Amino acid sequence: MNKIGIILGSTKPGRNGEAVAKWVYDIAKKREDAQFELVDIKDYDLPLYDEPYPAMMQQYTKDHTKKWSAKIKEFDGFVFVTAEYNHSIPGALKNAIDFLSVEWNNKACGIVSYGSAGGARAAEHLRQVAAELQMADVRAQVMLSLFTDFENMSVFKPDPRHENEVNDVFNQVIAWSGALKTLRK
Image 1 (cartoon, rainbow, N blue to C red):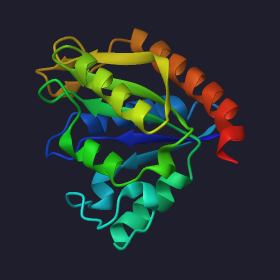
Image 2 (cartoon, rainbow, N blue to C red):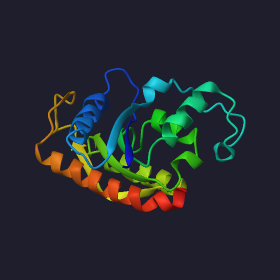
Image 3 (tube, one colour):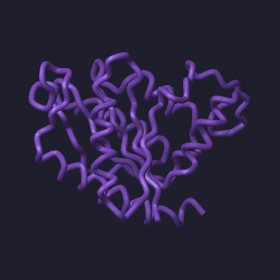
Image 4 (cartoon, rainbow, N blue to C red):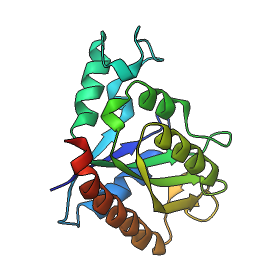
């Protein structure tokens, strides 16, 4: 059975992403076609990238990197929950991704984004990063608007239609994760 990590990509105090990621995880828990785990990058306390060697060499010297690497290796695919900050993903998410390389390769990923424009620009930027890491990003995505899916831009109240969109993302990520397993062996 595929194991899918739901990556919470914001670490700022008062982040909207925590409610969004928990909502995505609650939807995942209703499914029986994969195992799911919510992974909050805040729990890994990653400093700005501080390894002396390129990530692709996997010669990690820091305990926080080794712990992060071990966690990401566990998964067959991912759903990234990302905010949009200045037309891109949060710096903390980019930093967490950059700590590793091979651990991301040949795995599928989907995106749940949120922001004033639904996080569309962050999702597009994340797709470029995923492509460089040899990840297969799926077409389905969820875009949540700060104006219509949040009360006062802070209390998460998603439109009910988004639950189907989340399941579409899971369907594609799970299918692609299974298909990519042969490349990871």
